[in-house]
Length: 319
Ligand SMILES: [Zn+2]
Image 1 (cartoon, protein in one colour):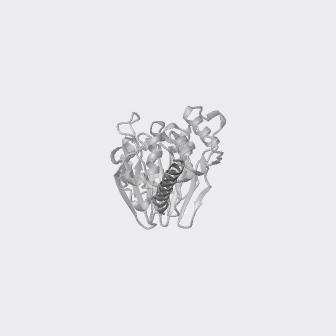
Image 2 (cartoon, helix red, strand yellow):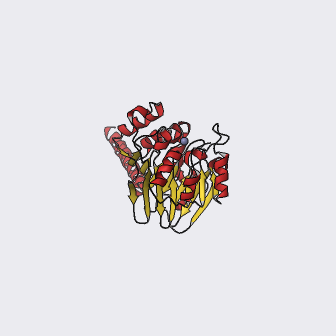
Image 3 (cartoon, rainbow, N blue to C red):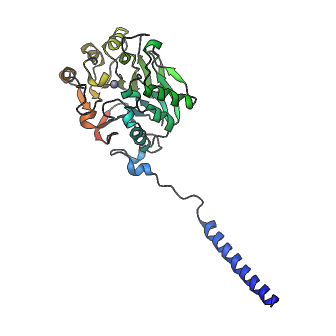
């Protein structure tokens, strides 16, 4: 009896060992890691090409993102680095980070907060938390004018929590220069202004022969300083200051910039009446092609250093 039971056990043991071996064989021959399908590819905004994922774009890409009544521009350099100028409003913080992630962006190498108003830094705390960040540029503002808003505090906390530092954005600073692509700061030129808008960090992106100017909400006082300082303000594409408001894109500044195209970032039927009719008329009179995020949603400019091509009507960040 004992012997038969022992035989029974040894048969059972053999069956078990074989079963275990079979299981090990099955799993052993499987690839250890299965190819992970990238959700980004499925939800990429219209117009986004598969070549944008991970790889360096063949041309410099400038996205004028439709964030409603706010500002946000993403620049994807040929070096594979990314620049984000402003980050829209707090209401679309998650949507903006998702959008940028879906474009295949892994890191924001240069983050520029033109000035600490909620329609420019609203989504920035989320960007800082979700992406690895290289350098952060912000204008230096006198203590008496530093805002105490929750949005600004949240951004400072996010920067602090990641142990990041803020570099003062002021005229004369070269943010990057790879030879083919260059980003320089043209304003602010003063230590003190009447309002926060004019502290806006104004940047000039040069790609070969082409030039893109990003003015934040810089008003005519800052524009006047830039022309007075003798900066070469000529550009091919001008991101109009202060959402096309009458405070910016003054006749003198426009004459100095002489853009071929202008981008106005503003919300549909916004409460501020942006863009100002006179500014639009001034641009039209100067023969400047106007792109508006309230009408054409996200606008993409692609530049190879010699030519610029525009794609309007890309997916909006706001839903
Ligand atoms: Zn603004």
